[in-house]
Image (cartoon, rainbow, N blue to C red; front, side, top):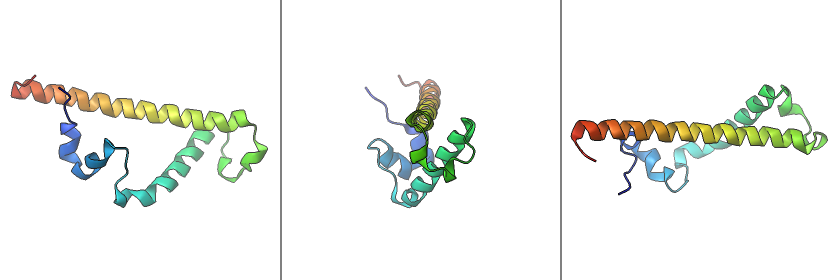
Length: 101
């Protein structure tokens, strides 16, 4: 039997309603684009391009732009893995406390 994300669901029920479908809650939609832009610029700075925000991306080699996007994806996957592992661990702890399997 697949368990729901009980631990996170209790903390953020409105967010969890949409997370399984990949939808972003309406109240967070305006923040997605600027947050991703900031993340992209931070990732580029980590890769040695501190002025990425102002660079004409057409002048950059595709490998440089690809590195930014690839590293963003890698970090987002690691973040998602950490969230999933945290939630899984907490569900196991919750199950141990309540005697469920």
